[in-house]
Length: 407
Image (tube, rainbow, N blue to C red):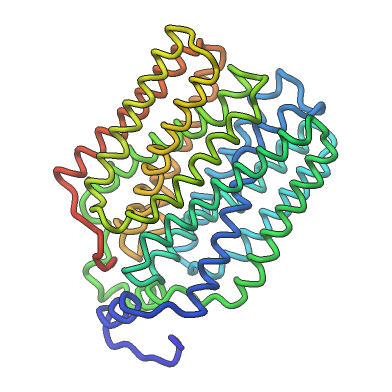
């Protein structure tokens, strides 16, 4: 239908998309991204979970843990840049191909090197795809659905985290069962993604901007404040989710390697669906302050847990509380990333923000190896404080994007 309409200016394109009614095309777009994010969620904790497999020696754990964010970082930067040059839709088959190749490689890996490379390739595809997906969804969905869809789709990654962690828990270190179920869940998600992606249109915003970029004055990077704030948000979410839920297991609680990601992922998934009820009722600026202030406070309480040597059950309760604020912070970040960049540089902008955060994450894995649990939580609390600082800056200096058209 979009191909049959001629637009004389960018304002008409934005008006057409922003006021559109929900259609079968919107359903296909949402479904394909939900399936893709679900598979990415499976991969998100695969690296720490496979450290339990016999083919990975304890001395090799840290390299397996790094392979996941390294692949994601590479895919994020490469695909983000290319999406602004050749389009969003064209990259979705590339991401699926790389992702499924890596997944099959993980299943068939017979040694440390093979599993290392397989995790890298899988994360390059599905992890790097997030950047393109966020840009595509924000550009194509009407204003009244944009926030909810971005949260709904990204929340399916939490479902993937909880699902694969549950498999590793129930399987009881049976590597064969873990591999079979992991492959079956991945293939199911990939099948849905491939079928629905055949029906996807190219981003109409990107198509118009790419052919009229020289005449659109508003297609510039603009103020550095949004980029800085988004970087602070990304640093908080990437470092604290990955470190507390994923890395804490292998390094500090080896007996709970599957339990911690399962609890955190399930908690965030449930809270993610709850957030849908009010995500478009409260301004983004206020929401960001609530999310990052709550996350900072809840993380600081972990220090009391460690100091007084409270039971593991208390740790679980604190993890769930932090999961709520973590999901709220994730939601605000996922929405603001595509909303604050212009179409011409949206892919590169999101990739840059995520790239810096994941680069720091990789460095933190090496830096935190072997430190005490207390110092570990001090670091996590400081990471949340960084996001809180960003939320205050955005509340005071940022612009409200709720119910506003994106350029």
